[in-house]
Length: 239
Image (tube, rainbow, N blue to C red; front, side, top):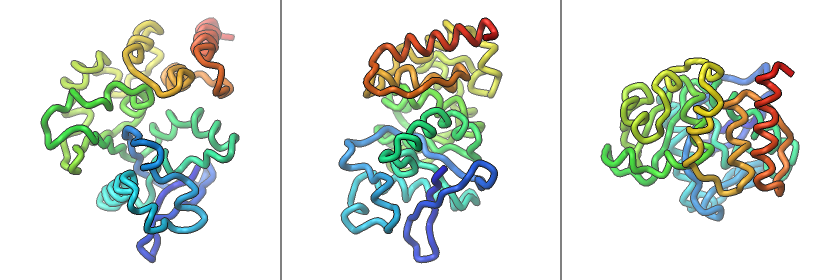
């Protein structure tokens, strides 16, 4: 697991940890900008970010997350844009199947809503329409919401009523009730109106919600959803 931190020279850098050695960390939930505007793993490792990288619009989100984490007493952060080495298929697969757990084990999650100004129009944010942000909402114990100008909006608990209205997710699920206590159709309903860039991710983003695991095969299209339901069925039958 790669984590983001600010070095003694003030530059953002990445450090790899194995499961037994992972320190407390904050985690960022956000919607991706166009890919050429998001710094990625190779932009920060093995060398620090160049001036060109720092000019990318997405770099500000890295600074935001690290700054918030520092204020909250955490030396490390996880941000999917830079903490996944996509040039390694094994690391990419590990990240996808581990992501629900990584969000769940985070000390705090910062949800950055880039289309919300101030404290208004929270429920209109497209953050609530994306597939991957479903697990990023449910898995962490603590979620803090911020607007595009980095203004604190509220927490998952303080905004429970608004979140229920826009997502249909029961408050009990937001509070940490075991997901296995919700029916399969109910959990499927939480994602049915959400979108993913790739068809496969509609299924992959639900693995943590159903606590099942399956190989990641980009290119399989909607077959991924069929495989997910097969794994859910097997789990329900105790296989």
